Amino acid sequence: MIGSIEFFNVPMHLQSSLLDFAFAELFAQASISGQLTLADRYGLQAALLKESLDDEEKQAIDRLLYGIRKGRIKLVNEFSAQA
View 1 (cartoon, rainbow, N blue to C red):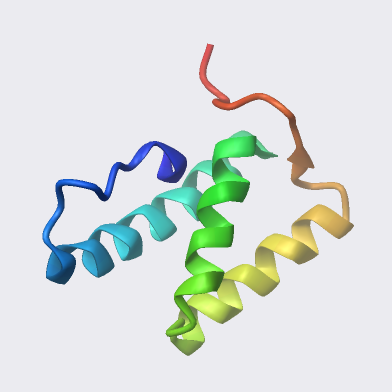
View 2: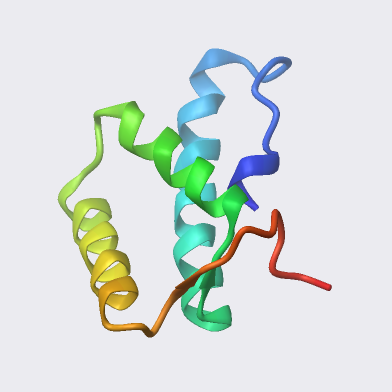
């Protein structure tokens, strides 16, 4: 999950690509599981703080929020959706 990525030992030029990959993974996992975990929400917050989201990423956030509003995606207080 995105929230488990450690950036301390990752070179700065690689951090952005790791965040991009994790961002895509977050949306894939949320759509499959129908849940947005605590770790996912921290990851989403990190992506939003990046302030350099492209249009595709912004649309993905809009779709995620729409899914939450419609009840298709549930917010859970677990750190991981996996058992």
